[in-house]
Image (tube, rainbow, N blue to C red; front, side, top):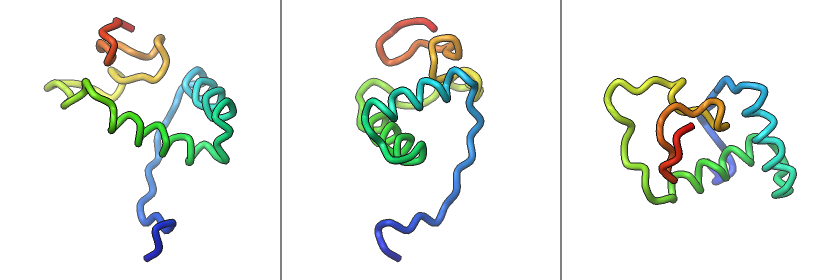
Length: 80
């Protein structure tokens, strides 16, 4: 299997605001696709300091991308 072959598919649902934020970042960084932008953001997020594990009882909706969607404190300590 080559390094460019990806054997797993991940499907996620995003709000309109999250898509707009993703696309804005993607175009600013000249990323070739949404998938490439998401992979880069995942790489950066996993490399970032300050997030160890989700707390017990956390739900998917607690982790939005835009400030409107965030309910938990983010890595900067800001409430969303």
